[in-house]
Length: 121
Image (cartoon, rainbow, N blue to C red; front, top):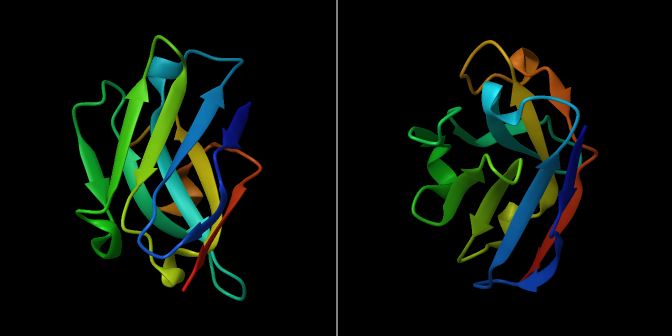
């Protein structure tokens, strides 16, 4: 089970930190990803992190602003979001990938329920 938290309403230029707590499995066996879905759009990749936390990847639009990290001892993955823009407004989902390390939505095995992030201009 994956449970996201930390979303909310923030002004442009502000920051939020999303958390995703995992339970029911061996967290360190999963690569983890953050995705987002804006109204009327498909779910899209934001960031991913390897099982050890040693490798991270980001979509171009968030590079330099967002940071993904994980704490395997706490079974939690984080997304630090700085310099937020109105176009970052979306529901943010965390997801777990048991077998791979990819940016593809369909490759992820487990998903959280999502947390809303709204950035006002």
